Length: 283
Image (tube, helix red, strand yellow):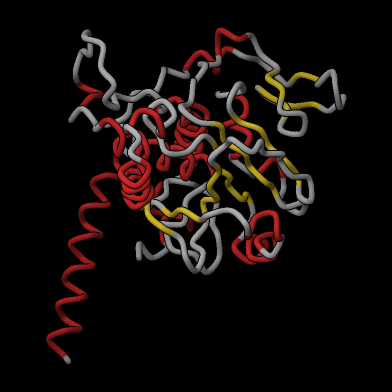
């Protein structure tokens, strides 16, 4: 028993040491546009819709308030619906980043508002439900269906993916469980993905660092979905990808454009090691 405890402690220390290295440059391996131009945007702007003063974008109306040249446009392979708990504070949520950066593919709903799905859509809920499956299993099930129906892979997959839409819940874990009781959500198949260590600067009580901010979760899910379909180019951030390729090479990394910018601003004002959010346990 003592040896087991020591081994677990040693393993955790190794993980902690590796994460400390990553935390020094957490976005180094990603292709995210330079956001320094946002520094030239002075003051706040009054939103034409709600008439409230905002910076860069209105998180209430999901509307950009600055010149489009400052905002990269991200095209996603599937549609993303975000269902936000009514008590979730708009200004503290990162869900708005997805709606601003990928406006053609992301829609935010405030519960009990709910997206309407057509019959031909293949929709999943990103939630660790009782019968949830992994992204890899999602592809495997699709391949088995192909064999059963004698259909080719391309006939059942939509642009190489077994789904057309994914639903995320934006709320605290306690609020999420209350939303999940809704039959409209419980009827959807649940999918989970491999998490990573969050770089979100807001402290969440009783949550380890692998609890991701909403924008981090969407980014992580899309990367794994793309990788399962086409693979990923190793160290793509340091390579000049001149030849067209279906493999992942940073196509969705700009979803973290505002997240990275705000992260860096926070870290100019506070020491990383002193922020409570980064003192949470890794596992």
